[in-house]
Image (tube, rainbow, N blue to C red; front, side, top):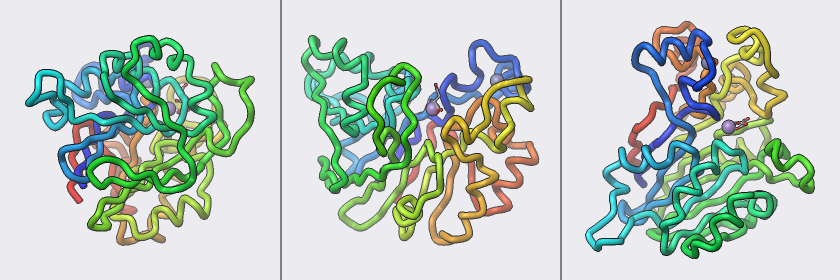
Length: 287
Ligand code: MLT
Ligand code: MN
Ligand code: ZN
């Protein structure tokens, strides 16, 4: 299995266009910028799938040699995308896929039903939509994806849509050799199902939106708590790391307020001391 971490920021990216918090200012004037959450994954190195398709997708694809088209003039190794939610930072890039001729977007039924971009894309003809059940989904190249329902949080634009347990999901990916990776960029609660998915996995990429629950207020002077936004802060999930000692443990989907995004912060040191890591844009994971 080969994985390319295309983007590691939460919605807004780092820096966020309208934010002058200490983290955004540091990323504006030096290194440390991050694009919005996206993963590319392949079991055989030839057939690739995106996980999420955020607003930064075009620049992410252009920066990733494995995803370049060819050798045919209109041949692409990208077969499809799997969505972990309907949030705009996970779906805003779908518009940029309108040139596709054969591309499947997989998501839970409630997410597919809510996506406003679906009706916009359909007349272009190349994107198919496929609902995900709880059964493992066999993909090209030997990749298998199993969705794990993680939360009921709907995007603000879909607040009137029906409730469901799987507005937010994680994925457990496996390849034919049994290697496994869990991708869970939005974790509202640490459930037995999530813990079971991580058990035996070679690595996990987990919700690192916020380091602490009141971080938004600390850094910007106001705003909701991490938990109220459907994100357990790193401080609260780090203790679970010890239950999965053989799983390499990364945090991703970092909000621009998260001090752990910055290598010299005490929060980053706390992550490292617990045996976890912070993912970075462009990072490659070979399993
Ligand atoms: C989230 O992760 O909580 C959402 O993506 C927030 C947003 O970008 O609107
Ligand atoms: Mn998000
Ligand atoms: Zn900021």
